[in-house]
Image (cartoon, rainbow, N blue to C red; front, top):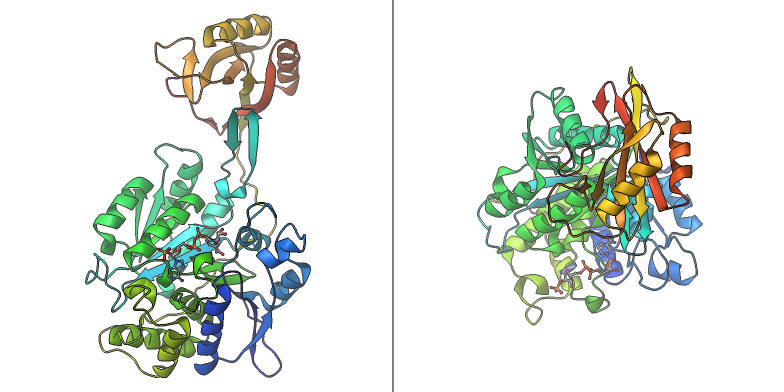
Length: 488
Ligand code: NAP
């Protein structure tokens, strides 16, 4: 991804100061960048709370979108997600608008920031898929008492994030990539990331590739975090474990991030607007400054980036200026005093605490056309019909069997909250009025066609309320659906 350069050779960056403590941190980062000699031109734009208040529901006004389209690079303060006005998070909107599919969250042990892990050399990067998964935000109330959130994971989305993780490992001279999923439970969605990882890992023989179940990953991160180098994972897993990893090295005040896409990159701290510290000049600006360091590397300004990172390491090592989150707010220096201490250390580097050698990340290139995964055969073998009913499992089962009599489809089973309840299994299931009723083609019917399903729905409608249907496919002979707990 090429950055936008002015005729005078300066690189254009859209800067969004953000809400709460955002402006204090972003100004600190801008001062350091300028002092480190990087030649950037800032285009300041708004997003977040002030924009929501103007009645712009996305929290991102057109002039901000226009600027980002042009500059393709953003340094951003945190944006508040207001409660009561505005619906969606402006952060998520920005990530999605510009398809910044990879969220890179590095953490490393820092001098003078004492944690239970000090001395163990934690230095790892979480690579979080940034646009898909439950964060696609497709939610419905299926009944007044049952909510649903669709977890959409695509083959293309998995390939993009996995390749990005391996390319990042190469660029940073890292040796190992773990893929953390919950594929043991969500075999199709989380499993798609695992399968894609295992396939693509073969193309990177120089990097050790290992799958790990996400809950064990969380356990291992607390027990022996130094074993990790790069962790690639789905959106929600990554959101959670990256907050965990930031706590391992001293907390949110030290956790930077980059949202990378093929067209646009957005750099921001992991933390939010921390409203209780807003305007008090006490917040730790390191996370935003380190995000700016990631941005400088992205723009090819490697020298300025290392200069700032080295100055942070020297400042923390000296320990003369430390913010309240490290030493207590009664003893900490102000945000500006801490920034000035870093400024004074520009040009110095620590003997003990080194900065890695970085190379530009080779961003994987993908065809922008909609992705189609081809199969040689597909067969529709039935459908799950979701029904709202206050009947018991047996009453509903008998009713649906009666309704389907003479149809090419037969009731195979009913599940409630994922567990098979009809035909009865003897399991003690605490049922709600939301039933997944699985119909499959009867013997002798090669495949379900829409007319079979429409006929079935016409039969069901007068007697039961149905909310949703999911067709059951076989792709290349393999079931494209999972079984309910207890289903054979
Ligand atoms: P938060 O703003 O991250 O703050 C939570 C706590 O983390 C703070 O109270 C503070 O802990 C600590 N903290 C955060 N930043 C720090 C820093 N720079 N230095 C030292 N300590 C820091 O999370 P929140 O209170 O849940 O969210 C506030 C708002 O931010 C919400 O509207 C949320 O939606 C938004 N948000 C935005 C982003 C983003 O823009 N990317 C990310 C997360 C949240 P102590 O109280 O222990 O001192």
